[in-house]
Image (cartoon, rainbow, N blue to C red; front, side):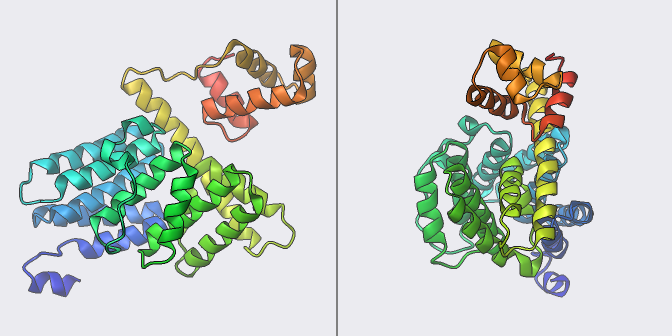
Length: 328
């Protein structure tokens, strides 16, 4: 690429760094990916290669999300917005909307995703057409809004055609989580197996990690299966890293709401607050049920709701977040 860029008067300047940075990002090595993406971005900007510059900023935004760094994620998005002034960059509004859609997906705010990315999936043209990348965001919108029927139909169609490896693994891993949410463990584990088979040869990890607590739950489910085909060390690694991602995502969401004068505190009902207080004091579920005069199943529902509202992955998270936000 370095030689090609020189021969073509810099029209691919920075793409070598960006391509390697992209690979390392998808392999989960964000520390190594970051400097390459920054260097490739600088070279692309100097040569006015705006599409490549946008690409570098997009991955820097995703790295910031994975680290729970709200300021850096917002800065990357703001830098992408400046590219809207470059008239030579013909796809600037479309690519910016796609990045914006991904950003609000990470913030769990589907209502703020640009309207056209909430519409039906665009029919397949070619793996590298911009519509294919827009469909990736549409899939995430369906995932957040629990429109699983439309999402699964798109994924089935995706399997019958050519697609870019990274996006393919993203969709296959998401499909596994969809089936788990639908309480179909057999299909969830089969889909995870297919995603793993596509990802493992090139050590692709980030599509699994970015599914956060949903992937943590799925890998924990797979680890309980005695004869499951995916290696245990891989499941443990993905489970551990997706748990860490979920924690950072929770921090990102809280800081975003606080920075934008929104209600950054979790809004718990009075009953949820009572249950949280008992959890904080170390009571078991049965003890909470007795103390609050509730059934065990009702206590479980309240606890699940608390986990969801606090973006917590385990009881340790609940205790930490409750103390930090003075909820108890």
